[in-house]
Length: 201
Image 1 (cartoon, helix red, strand yellow):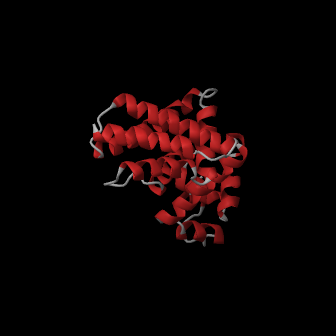
Image 2 (image 1 turned 90 degrees about the horizontal axis):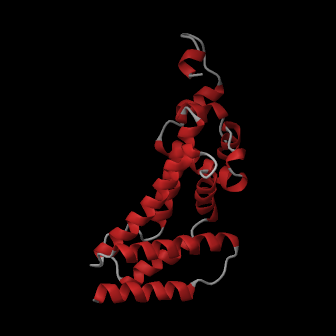
């Protein structure tokens, strides 16, 4: 229920609604998205409730509903947040880079905060059972593939097949690092060689 409808004119709002008013800025919304990522990464979508997100963020559960309205909207925005955070914290959004830096971005994506990556894979797996989540899976794959394609283009490489190869390799590396972490240097080195060869051709 919206706060405006719940609390009539002239009636003092409780502390919870004052907290709600104080957290209408971008940082408050981001904190809730980050909390959503942590909750789902730890317990899957079945663990996702307004109360769980609120507890993780240290706010009232009414604040979560106020910002996002529905659970589906919360999930969708959290997926967008996770994808952007993952790409931003690597060099996949950098304007200019070398083949070595490109490969370094691949490696850094594999080493990103586990909850960010786990959240995305939880949604991808759940989308097999829930068709309404499939657009989020498509968004995930499109965003990473497009980021790789843009970075290759900045290196002068226009090769759709290479883009697919690197994306499939990255996806496999990241998933494996979540399940059985180990040194991925040989794989990253090979990717660097492929990119350098394509950029130099």
